[in-house]
Length: 465
Image (tube, rainbow, N blue to C red; front, side):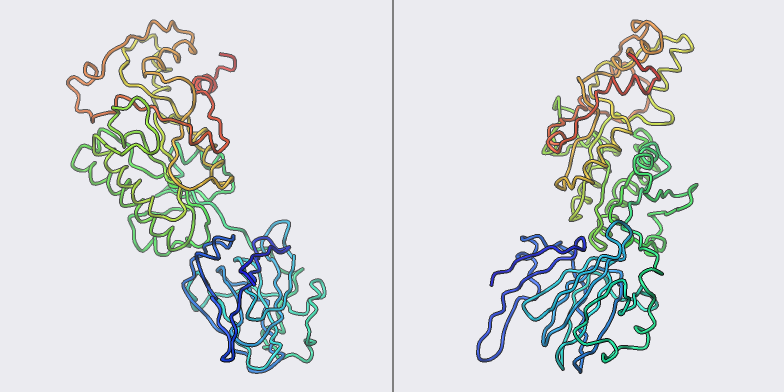
């Protein structure tokens, strides 16, 4: 027999058929072989603890128990009749599956699915690898082994089986509240990108340092340690220090590195430990701007402190097994920003001079949020993706002229200037001359970015531009 994988009616509950090598001395099998098993479709679930339940007598029956981890179950000696019931919310709630397990059969049980078994021989050992450590004081949901709605065909009638008193008093399926599925966490939910992510993903849990129902300070080790990271399968990190010029100051340098480098490094460690997908938002400032367009493979070469701290964060996040780094530029969302400033100037009859030698594309936060949902829900390959709106590369002056036009002003009322002239007498951080990001990799996943000026018109309240 070769190693093979079979799916079951319970989503993500998988049966592995295992080769068992026998001779006169007994048998041998590879009970856990990460490379071979993941190659045929088993999740790389990261086991951290191995438990064995020994059953002295035939008829010993345990479960249904729903434990807060994924597990890979097998028997090391004897045989069992095993049964599972899905207690996760959704259309599969209450779906059950049974199978006889001997040393040649192994079953992967996802979190939220109740596990039970009945020993068919004396001296049966039931083994399971789990991907979280057992902790005292945690109650596990359970279901009545004899629930007529499940009608499990136990080979040994339960009246003749050896069952603990606790398992004899478990509730029926009809009395159980479905368990919530894994959730999405939005860090930095109070910022312009965080608000857009929460609008795009209304079921996500919004978290900020203050001012929201759920607060978390990533700089507080005790708070981070107490946070239930195991409850989330996706963490979106929209928290960042974005004051580019202030980052060049003594205090700003510390704050920038704390938020943009240390925080993401901590999240990457947590992603490895708790196996969630980490989505992190990067910037064109990781480049020096010498290339007219930047693809995802270009070596990073930041000019200033802000770009350097973001570069460090990108490198840290890349150590998480399941990660997306979404690199973006010229972000526009709700709140004060370049477009709103130009609208205000247009309304007050002011004719500004705007930089014409920095080139890029706008990224509206709702488009960035839409791309986030697309990549995560379509299971796009992990890694770094450029994400901006589409359309031609423009300068800041081009954008200002379009805002003036949309506002009913003559675009020629916007003058053009150079970065050097605009910066004269100001203490400004260096900025990349070219910020445009190539979007080929993103498009290859099936996502088509909306043209920046189309989104700009809608943002400015013009339906037909």
